[in-house]
Amino acid sequence: MVVEPVVVAVWAMLPAYVPNNAAVLVGGGRPIDGGRALPDGNRLFGDGKTWRGTAAGTAAGVLLALLLTAVRPAAVEATGVDVPAFPLAAAVGLAFGAMLGDVVASFLKRRTGRERGAAFPGFDQYDFVAGALGLTAVVATEWFLATFALPVLLAVLVLTPLLHVSTNAGAYALGLKDEPW
Ligand code: CTP
Ligand code: MG
Image (spheres, rainbow, N blue to C red):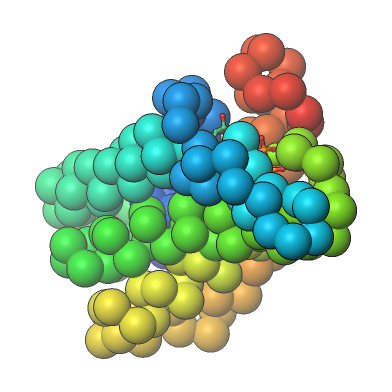
């Protein structure tokens, strides 16, 4: 069945999907780079990467993982799919990793001369996935290997850009975000 890996993929990645959206809602204040630029004349990360957004995004992702873990028995019962619980290391790896991937992408955006908010095709859709999966593979290796079997990983890679495009278009339409990407 193709449905099962899709359900596991969405469930397992929810704590990585939410941080960026929470950062959009709560972000602002002091930028992580403190306004500093590199010798290329461009900012290290830019004003779009703030301490408050990063902290709030990470907290939102971790809290969601704890919530999903609490409701997991009911979810398994309702769907018949063996969705995973989230150990704390996995929760932090997914949430903080997503934020980290986004910050790294902004670093690369600035190095390639892109202004804050400029589109960066590929990176905009996958930066947080790469960060979340990468950090989780390191800090929660066993959980990562048990959860992201190949079909689940493929489902993540196919579904993420679709979910990303639709949530960002929604946030843009609601006036929460300045650009639709
Ligand atoms: N945000 C934040 N801290 C983060 C990530 C996001 O405060 N670590 C907030 C900022 O207010 C940011 C908004 O969420 O403007 C949208 O995030 P994003 O699109 O990632 O940033 P951009 O402003 O587009 O900047 P960049 O070009 O660096 O991606
Ligand atoms: Mg942006």
